[in-house]
Image (cartoon, rainbow, N blue to C red; front, side, top):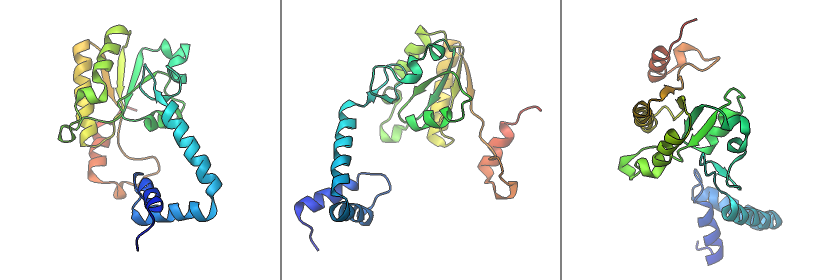
Amino acid sequence: MQFSPLIQELIDAFKILPGVGAKSAQRMAFHLLERNRQGALQLSHVLHNAMEHVKHCEQCRTFCENSLCEICASPKRQASTILCVVESPQDVLAIEQTSEFKGRYFVLMGHLSPIDGIGPAEIGLEQLSEIFEKNNIEEVILATNPNVEGEATAHYIAHMCKSAGIKASRIAHGVPVGGELEFIDGNTLIHAFVGRRDL
């Protein structure tokens, strides 16, 4: 069955979202058309507004509406000599929810992936290098994801830190709290042993 051009355009628009295939996109489109046209209009307004006004923080590169995000604008954070490097704004949110880290962030907006044409310039490493030069950074915590690209990115930045005379550390990866060893995969156990600490 062929949908009318506008309905097909709506379905195709939903398919740009991660994890949304043709069937899910159709369900969403028809749900809005059948049951919630007012909600759809509000969604379109909010989407347009966000796309127009949300930009990157000039300092850490996370998403915000002002030149500096709330974290970078905080005098307490500005005084910190510890910088945490993460891959995405969602990672900042996850770390902030722990209330443990009181330093500053740098958001890469991705990771190194030469096969996809993503090199140092694409993830802002020139800006990170400038931060190293202009700020009194004593330690960089590398909190990239524990996959091949994340590890490669962490090693690259660790080398940058070494050249700048800055201590680089990596967040520990290992057995989750409440996890049982018999159900943990081999790679996670290897990381747990490598990242062990004294008690």
